[in-house]
Amino acid sequence: MSPKDPITHPISAIPAEGEMIEVAHGIHWIRLPLPMRLDHVNIYALDDGDGWTVIDTGFDTKRGRAIWDGLLGGPLRGKPLRRVVATHYHPDHMGMAAYLIGKGAELWTTRLSWLLARMLTLDLQERPTQMSLDFYAAAGVPRQVLDDRAGQRPFNFADCVGLLPPGFQSLAEGDTIRMGGRRWQVRFGQGHAPDHATFWSLDDNLVIAGDQVLPTITPNTSVFVNEPMADAVGEFMNSCRDLQAFARDNHLVLPGHHRPFLGLPARLQQLHAHHVDALDRLEAHLAKPHSAMGAMPALFKREIMNADMDLAMGETLAHLNHLLLTGRVSRTLDDDGVWQWQRRIAHSREALNNG
Image (cartoon, rainbow, N blue to C red; front, top):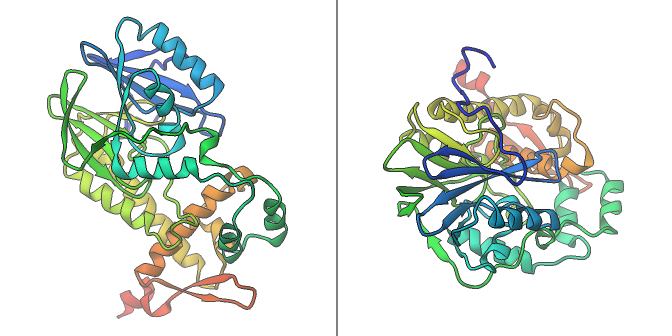
């Protein structure tokens, strides 16, 4: 790490599987494995005196259940698990919620997170829908790839997320709740997930950030078939600006991935600047028309493999949407039914500077 890096990690140790590390009084850090490039998710257990609150859960897998059973019978032994708080609906954060609710815990999350998770676990697909195939075809995904996909079972949310029961406790923007002997104010972020809950201690310098603010990677901001014209990038950039008003240098941020860190104001600036730079690169790349598939190299320096294709395409479309919605590019449907995106010269930076 560069000595000039404004982001520092005051806790050098990383919890081993099935163990936990106390990162602040009454707050313990746990890591659960994920079967992907990002190979872990952070869980936080907060000591409420007469029981435990846990923030996020990991995937619902046999290995995940075994780890949780070990935690409940080991480090968390002696007090009941009373509450599961999910920062957002993504599988690595909501996956095991149903399993833990079955052990007596209540679920607390945002209304949109519960609705999306509940809906998606009920939406089982044995083959991709035609709408999904059309969505990727219009983005320029090669026909052979689409033909291969058409005959394969797609990822289903229920593959790693247990079905949530119909009852939950809703978290709203501005709520104050008690966890781990502290009062926390709920503040929403957008862009990575709708109504992503973050928690800001009113009693000391702690922030539980989930995936809204990560220390070493940029949270994914993707567009998918269910909302193809969403402006996830614009929403995320706005959230960076909004949360900046509350951020302090001495905040210890407990993120959903990687290590706790200091330097929240600088990190929010970095995340915002990352998207400004990405949008500028993409706009320059579109001096000539490209499909979303052809625009992808402007955003990603590494080769995109099949396992990462959907997220990379979602990110690319999210940036293209933002450029379109802010008048910086236009798009035209070609004879093959593929959207071709191109910079609008009249709105380019060069034209504005010359004007």
